[in-house]
Image 1: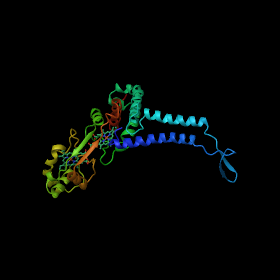
Image 2: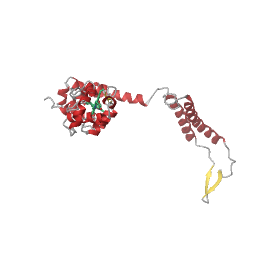
Image 3: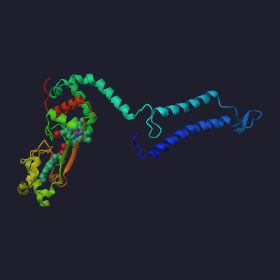
Image 4: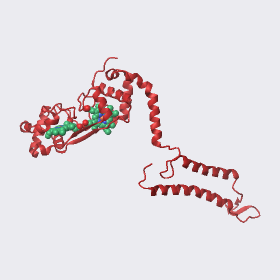
Length: 303
Ligand code: HEC
Ligand code: HEC
């Protein structure tokens, strides 16, 4: 428990917890000792609703016993488990530890299930309905929030069904993407291109590469400026999967279509991150997932 920045709050919480428990004992002691002057009829002398009186009997022993047991239980509990400020408890139990233990247990239980998958190639797995049912569930639980439940993505999140790949579409590349994550980074390029007019021209040249609507005069003028982009997107604009630079000739737009979107890319650049899964999913899980993703855009091998 390192949630406290200094020991003050830890001591403060500990003080309140212990004072509460000791307060209970003191209360018991006081109410056990206090002798109300006895009356002949053994009542406290209070009368409610005309004739309702209260007997002045001592606390029943079974009740006092239970009370003391709960206090002892509370103290033992606080020795064993975290509860007193930053004191971790003798058993060193944590929610995180419990979660990890459950994960390890679940992984163990699932091992026989995944064992039947490890021997197969990803291409063969993509044709195995069992593996694909598992892959789909893993995808829905871990990937759908960004890539969509149909894996078609949305602005900024690539479509995984279309055979257009930023980082490569072979099973090995997809496994690498899922395991280590990816960062697609394009720096702001406006200064390297020149004036705002030059930026507009090169944007129109980019649009011309995919046959998208563009101003052909501006595209002509922008062509020479594309050298600033060629280092990453290639002289022909077909991209470079080594650095995740997209193909600009295929009319598939990750960050929006049209002159404004391309100009915005040139002016602002973009950093786009696919998280790494190596610590959240096991190797066989990643393999099944990669086979599932690969199968979305490939005809799977016959089993
Ligand atoms: C937090 C959002 C997020 C989650 C969750 C996520 N991804 Fe991604 N993923 C991205 C982004 C963003 C990119 C694009 C990275 C880039 O621009 O280079 C990406 C890229 C990819 C790519 C590369 C696509 C290509 O064209 O090369 C694959 C494959 C992929 N994700 C699969 C998965 C799988 C499988 C999961 C579930 C285990 C997953 N993603 C979960 C955001 C996410
Ligand atoms: C340092 C490498 C680099 C340079 C230089 C570069 N880009 Fe990019 N560009 C990228 C990367 C990487 C991405 C993908 C970002 C992502 O993963 O989201 C990208 C994305 C784009 C996109 C979005 C594509 C889509 O599918 O939405 C456009 C348009 C673009 N670049 C145009 C240009 C132009 C025009 C230039 C030159 C003025 C240029 N880029 C220079 C690396 C580069």
